[in-house]
Length: 67
Image (cartoon, rainbow, N blue to C red):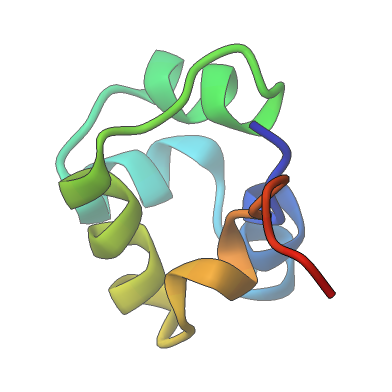
C-alpha cells in the first residue's frame, strides 16, 4: 500500500528505529511499510496516524477512493 510514512518520519527527524520504538513495532516493520511491501493492520495504521497527528487517510493512500 502506498503511503507517506517515510516523508512524515523524515519531516519529524526520526530514524526508523525511533519510530518503531515509539509505536511498538520492529524496525523491520517500518522498513517494509515504507517500501510498500507490508500493509499495516488497521490498529497499526491508526497508531501511526495518531503518532503523527494526521488522519489515517493522509498517511495511507486509499486506492479505491473516488475523487
